[in-house]
Amino acid sequence: MPCLVTDREVPVKFIRHGIFSGHSARVAPYFMHHFDVLIIGSGLAGQSLALRLAQHRRVALVSKRTLSDSASAWAQGGIAAVLDPEDTIAAHVDDTLLAGAGLCDADATRFVVENSKAAIEWLIELGVPFTPDSETKLGFHLTREGGHSARRIIHAADATGAAVQTTLIEKVRQHPNITVYERHIAVDLINANRIKGGGSKRCLGAYVLDIDGDEVVTIGATHTVLSTGGAGKVYLYTSNPDTATGDGIAMAWRAGCRVANMEFIQFHPTCLYHPHAKSFLITEAMRGEGGILRLPDGTRFMPDHDERAELAPRDVVARAIDFEMKKRGLDCVFLDMTHKSEAFLIEHFPNIHARCLELGIDISKQPIPVVPAAHYTCGGVVTDLSARTDLPGLYAVGETAYTGLHGANRLASNSLLECLVFSAAAADDILAQGTSDAAILPDWDDSRVSDADEMIVISHNWDELRRFMWDYVGIVRTNKRLERAQHRIQLLEKEIDDYYANFRISNDLIELRNLVLTAHLIIRSAQRRHESRGLHFSLDYPETLPRAMETVIPPRQN
Image (cartoon, rainbow, N blue to C red; front, top):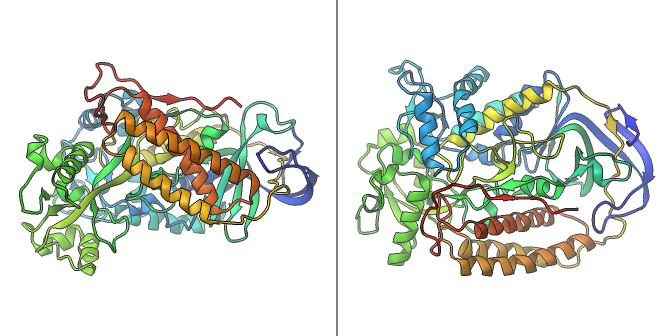
């Protein structure tokens, strides 16, 4: 085993071991930072875990941008939980299993739903300003969304994620045991069995790029947690923020973890269609409150596709919109809320009302132009009910993880709930274990690489990737489309690997490298599924097989 040290920052000098392609031996002094827990990603899962751990552990929280830049902060609808006395755990479980099209893990689903009330109570204790309703026994307003059999979505108007994140950020910044690394992006995990004298397989921390300082920091940790979100930016059109580049999924797979069900990418049915509205989501709750989807001539079309009409699960609604747009050559369809009063819309959807008004759309008088967009990665890094991955010392929570909750399609507003429940589970597991001294780790080496001569390579490859993923691996797939995507991804992988090996890394290169690998995993998973189920719809295999099977991709053998 490597030598052990106990200081938080430890100056050491030694020979680098050339662990990663293009980065090898030289002698240089550096400071290795060490924490009890390293959390990579600062959305709801990462911040809630940090707060649960900080009373007992020293925590590092790494954020690619700032603490407020995450998919969690963009969540509008709310958090699904069994809070109404007339609602039941069994009903919420059944709704989740139905939406998951036979692929949800029953134990994981029940575990999440049974812990939903405690998760919401924890947020209320922290001071999250959920929308009140004096006419309910709970004291808070509950709405209903597609796929749910009851009103069980607790929310803060139409900006739940922002309200939750604002509350947590204040407490994270004030806590003395939490060190925040903003504008830092993880490069790769450090696996003990891949370093000289490192011993058996275990995650020892990560290499992290200081984006502004342009230097790679070595952060050692007894426990490392991936909470980096999903991979929506692999597609041309997405409701996700720019940070959603599949970082945690790619790093975990490179480090030796399995990933599962990557073919199931949820496309949100209703993203605002406007040239000046990048990635602006129109919440599911609008359809829950009576929104009607119409063609440009005003015709309602959802009853022709599903008996649940606008309240059908997201995959059904997204495919219906995609079908109508392609059949009729439309740029978009329309979500109509004009039958609701302006006062109602301002009360329930103030942010959507204001944003649309800025763009010249009065939603009390005009329908909202909408299109489907990549929204949520249902698959991810395989974990157990304590959020542990295949690599000892490494956990994954939130959209990065595959817990078994979402199956082949995520039920609306179960995502923030999953973040809360599994961050609590991970915290319990980490706190049940002791702390350890820091292993001295090899620092990052860039002695054999040079500055990139043409950054245009990265921007061209990024654009090509997102376009062919949208065209060939989107809402509707075929064998031929997947073969074309596979061919292109192989070319991109080779080009990016060569670029990574020969030039100094940058934020854009790290994100592109992770996106290309994540796209590779999505394509491989889609090719393995010879049926249509949930979010994966194939024209070559339109039927659903009688037995539901997970798609598990083992790591490369290194």
